[in-house]
Amino acid sequence: FLHLAEAIIALEEGDYTVWFSGNSGWASEYYENALGLSSATVFFVEADGVRSGVDAELGRAGWITGTVSGSGPLPLPSVEGLTVAAVDPATGDQIGWATTTASGDYTIEGLPPGTYDVRVDRSLNWLEAWRSGAVVVAETETPDIDLTLQPACKITGYVTPEGGGTFGFDGAVNAYAGVWIDEGDGGGRWEFDWQNPGVVRLPDGYYEIGGLEPGVQYVVGFYSDGQWARE
Image (cartoon, rainbow, N blue to C red; front, side, top):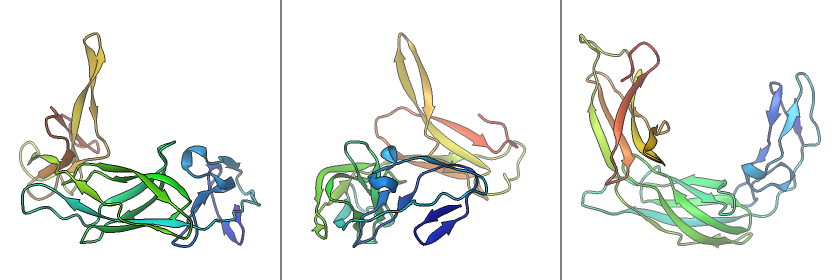
């Protein structure tokens, strides 16, 4: 068990870190005042044991606001539901995040004072975008941290079982895009993006892999849960 001030959390035996989630008024932090996961204290919790005294005193927070918009030929895809993150430039840790509204607006709350890079994560229709130098002050809004996205490329197609029929359910087979990583001296390897699958959907086996960079040569691999051969 882990005793967090007035909270008791049942845990399996193992190594843990603890994150205290702030809000618009209070700054998030990891145990022992660590800003991000890379500097967080890791401690071991024994089976049926109690680790007490894992306390925190939160400071006042600031927050970042802005608008995410798209560029490219009309009609533009939606910018709703994109993940926007405040990143510690020293460590690359993600300190806070939010999702965009239908109009592209976002608010990242619970940020300790400091300077952040702001990142919009890659999505099906848009490439990743960054903006640096967002200075956050306690109890203060940092406004107008706006970002403009560039359209992403897609690979689409159809995958069907040999001999007909379907794969049984959406995601029984997934498509992944891979890029060649040159390791010098004529050697290299194909590296696949396992975080960005093109889910093969029923009934027709259509898939699309989005978020791809223009001008890059890709290969596509098809992987299943074991019932179907990979290729």
